[in-house]
Amino acid sequence: MDGRYSFEDFIHIVERLRGEDGCPWDKKQTHESLKPCMMEEAAELLSSIRIYEKTGNAENMREELGDILLQVMLHSQIAKEEHLFTLEDVIHEISAKMIRRHPHVFGDGSKGKQEEAIRADWEEIKRKEKEGKAWIESPLREVPKELPALARASKVLKKADKLYGKGNSFEENAGCMEKSIKKLAALQPDVDRIKLQELMGDILVNLSDIARLSKIPLEQILTDRIEDIIDQCEPAEKP
Image (cartoon, rainbow, N blue to C red):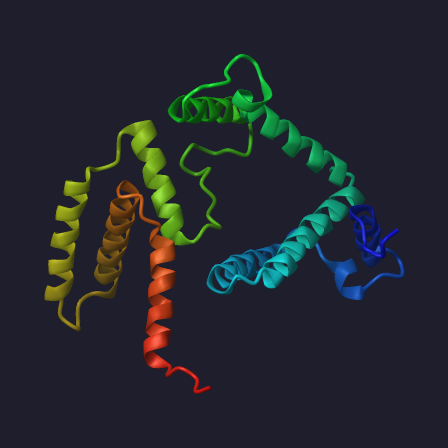
């Protein structure tokens, strides 16, 4: 024993936190109440990756990955208490999924395939996995509402284009975007609020489609631009 905690130790720690003599906060948590925690922890992990890229220091990333793991452990422990599934079930399912979705790695004669063929296999395997799943309302509604709106828009548009041929070309979107911007510029201050909202929605959707077709991460671009605005508004701290 080198004094370091193991994965098994961590399992027992979470069990104790949820146990009879555990922490009041941890004991009262549910899948629903933990949703904001997972969203915040995911955002903090993304922040830690940015910090690492900027400074080369991975300490914060290591900490935030631990916080994400805690969320997984809490949900798994709650599910175990509810007789839904266990942590072992979660580990088994993701392991089976990775092997199933990577036949070019784990065998079946498809080794050596090109990336395009591998991607096609991946999509076909995913499609078969989802057959008969009662919770999937429709292919487009499968894209989670919980995603940031710009990211969800790109995913919905991509899937709509692929499944139903509803996507537009870059030129069509750019032309539509230009018209929308001209209309927005021509609006008067007393314009009907509902009309303004509809127009702004059209502009955002068109931007999302242009970004999708150009393989540009619109959500990240907006995040970076916000950081630029903060840098411009707030003077750098003096050493």
